[in-house]
Length: 164
Image 1 (cartoon, rainbow, N blue to C red):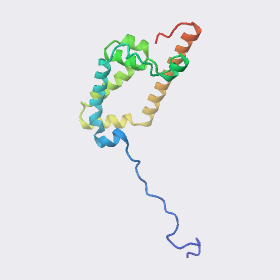
Image 2 (cartoon, helix red, strand yellow):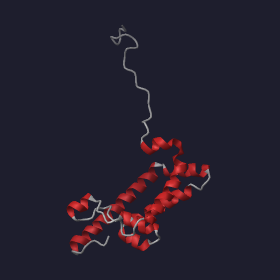
Image 3 (tube, rainbow, N blue to C red):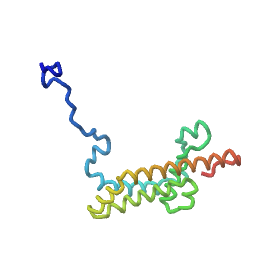
Image 4 (spheres, one colour):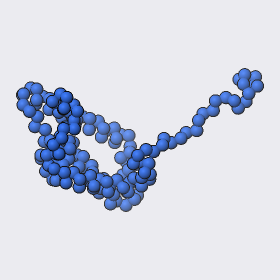
């Protein structure tokens, strides 16, 4: 036994070696090929949105609206993406302000797939910067909050059904 520790040498706790978290789902299946597959998936998403019916499929998927009768912050986003994918930007903006933005992100992802590998790597590293991600997150949350507040004012102040 070691006189200082009161235990045998080597019996103390050792720090566990760092292990990367296990990949799940699509990330596990694609591995490092994700940057090559993302543009194809973005084009597929835009094509699918353009192929869907303009007014949606007629089902109410929002549990918040189903229970309260008031649209949530995301209501209208699918219809907005469908309209933006068809090129109807004015109607898409009226339905939800993030719909056209989401279509532009998908289109940008598809176009980024055409860039040379070095430029894609630079773009990916720039987008992964914390300040870029934080700014984008704050902007999305801000748009959702302002959009929902405008809806609630429209519904409860003027007592009119939601336009979007």
